[in-house]
Amino acid sequence: MHSFSNPEYGYGLWIAVILNTAIFSLFAYLAFKPISKRDWRTLGAFSAFLVALFTEMYGFPLTIYLLTSVLGNRYPVLNPFAHDNGHLLVVLLGGGEGLLSLVHIISNGLIVAGLIIIAVGWKRIHSGHGRLVTDGIYSRIRHPQYTGFFMNIIGFLIQWPTVVTIALAPIMCVMYYRLAKQEESRLIDEFGQEYIDYMKSVPMLIPRIV
Image (tube, rainbow, N blue to C red):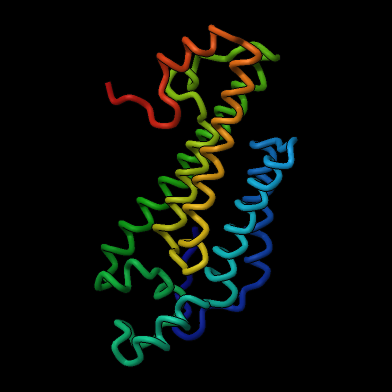
């Protein structure tokens, strides 16, 4: 979520890799509260996504090395290793400050909104003291935490797509979806018809427009 203007080599910032990975991983842990082995695997996959993302964002730009080796002098920019040129969507779509600003607005908007949704969902569910929570954000979607994680993944992919994160993203989405279905089975066992009726009236991950 940061931009550097270094005209030369904009990487090797390993402290930034560690700090960003630690901050987002800690937030994910606090929001997710893993208990089962599947929970820990899912959180581990998200942490691996963050490591891959921030390593290429600040540490070592593997994807850019791969692209420049394949494209050679056909690569769209003269200095692919300046940090602003790490925004591959911007570079491959022709560049420009306007496009760079649009990518930042969309990606940062998705990331921040996802974090807010995760935090709101976490606060609401933990204030329920074991009862079935169906009000607030839970009146719009059944799994706001997972919706927030999906938004984070999409936001990061728009901002800084890499070979590894593009490969990991669909795997993580499937893992979160399966985890949500597992939680629903447990909630049906716990709350019975009350939760079944709730499922019929409230969407799983994407709120209804009307």
